[in-house]
Length: 367
Image (cartoon, rainbow, N blue to C red):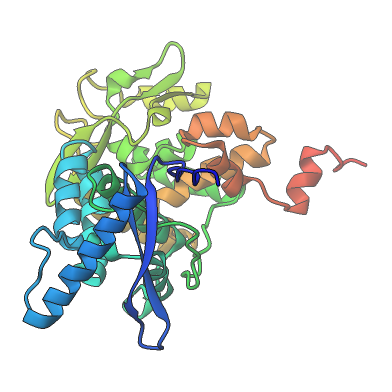
């Protein structure tokens, strides 16, 4: 009789043993995996020790695992270690910290980090909401990314062996609001009104598609009037009242945008010192909150006097991109000018089946 085959570890180099550790409320068995990098016997020993600890806990009422790490403890440590000071402060506060503290810790907080399963993650996404309404897909994507990163780091630090954030489906997603944009005729009317009221910020957004943060970070020295180009090199954000001047949001956001001769001539009449900010013409930038107040006042006044709908700064940016697309500019050029990090973002926004646009692009109008 030959010798029994030696057990082999899995692809991760781990020996796994599954044992029954209890029952669910519906009577189904609860199975738990134990792992070892040494041998299957060592994994079995860990399983037996776990059962002993469970029995002690049930008999004494005391927790037999002194080094239990809860999701809340690990999530906070993850934020401080892997994100604080690593990503931009604005991103840290409004993408990572806010989602962890407002949504994830209240739900998973006291759970043992190693005991959270895929079904627990799926249940969270099935019911998470804000003020009784489902969250936007972009928010759900961020939370899924954050959870995956938290568990990846937990695995790297031997706090758990599997990442439960996989095959997650969104059952409830907020209906995406329609992104508005001016038609070419409306954009021309808006631009003319803005010029009459010395609102060069509006004119700049309609002619370049810059983000609000990039607009506020623009200095006169960033505009090359001879070559007719604007260089986007910084952005202004605001965190807890503090104005932050930093690099734009992504590497692709650092870009150069060609200008028309007419628009260049328009800007040149306002040109200030190279170190002065274009908006405000001061050495210090406008705060986001101050600019938002001025922008809203202008839009309300313009809407009352012209009948044009009020758009947000992002929708003025969208107007620029839409105009480019309707003029037959390819999406790769639009991606570069808009500063999108991925061509799929550009395609999702500006590639559509509008028959009139397709007809113009195919040059069928005269046939």
